[in-house]
Length: 357
Ligand SMILES: Nc1nc2c(ncn2[C@@H]2O[C@H](COP(=O)(O)OP(=O)(O)O)[C@@H](O)[C@H]2O)c(=O)[nH]1
Ligand SMILES: [Mg+2]
Image 1 (cartoon, rainbow, N blue to C red):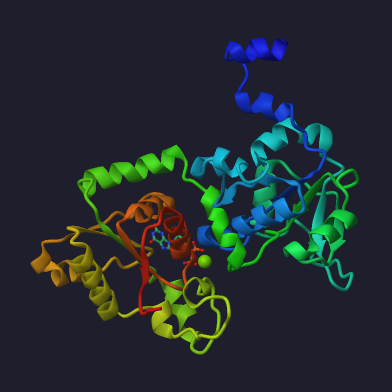
Image 2 (image 1 turned 45 degrees about the vertical axis):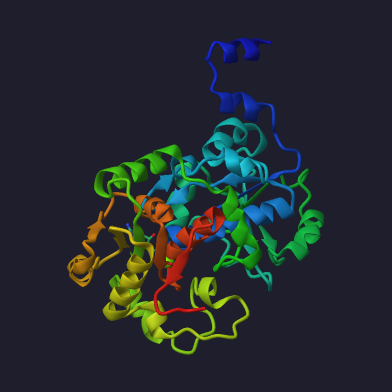
């Protein structure tokens, strides 16, 4: 009753009341999104969400990791995820449940070890491992060895080996998931929706710089790390996010131009899509060279404006690309694959440089 009165009076945050009522006897999963930057972390997230569902534990939504922890809900809405599975923000979990149910002294890190070797089990050595857990206020007291895979077929093995009464919280050093994302987890993007803050910033840019008009969005991944990574891809059947184009059967091979398209290819395909859609705006997202002058000159006769933002957050580029009438991305990039999955959900078309199905 007291809680109800406080709630009605607006004295308690709703999340506190909801979470307080809901300690999950089936247990929890938390992990550090410690591998790669945002695109990789997002693919891992989808796999981890699928894994949490398969073992029937609540997923503690980890902060995204940049140079600091970013609470999950700064970038994404929490409620749509609940349509799929039970989730709770890491910050809420730490504040509301950890003191009683996962207190200091009882925090174990799950360590993959096939041979019983424990030399790799320290959860907090190096960056981003150490700052990730420290910013959440977590130290580890012990570890638990496991050698079970994360595929659905092992769900029962997980449940039998680690019952929630004995192991209420499973904390993983990395995502309990694969990179690239497994094919059957792609559809989980259905539940991943930008926060109002990110969506709002994207809408402002579209209104201010693209006159709220239809536009073609392109992703040019051409920074120095990428140029180096693309040098040795010839003949590989899978490289980073390449299954988004080549499929998961490993029957096709990656070629360098798929990873790093020529300027000529970028101009050719952008023009083709501009002509087909009749848009008057092209939005360029890139980590390095936007090729703005080259694109404008190549599209001069179409009176197309080419706009490059270089936003303070890469997520703003992603949210804008998601809104484009047609998107052209890079097969190998998980930054592209994020946009492509969102567009698949929305029924919007995506093309890729140097790639025809
Ligand atoms: N703002 C912005 N940043 C980008 C763009 N492309 C790459 N980046 C940055 O480079 C990182 C690339 O790492 P990741 O997201 O893992 O994608 P991947 O390496 O392309 O698979 C992104 O997270 C961004 O920080 C872009 O078009 N716009
Ligand atoms: Mg990466």
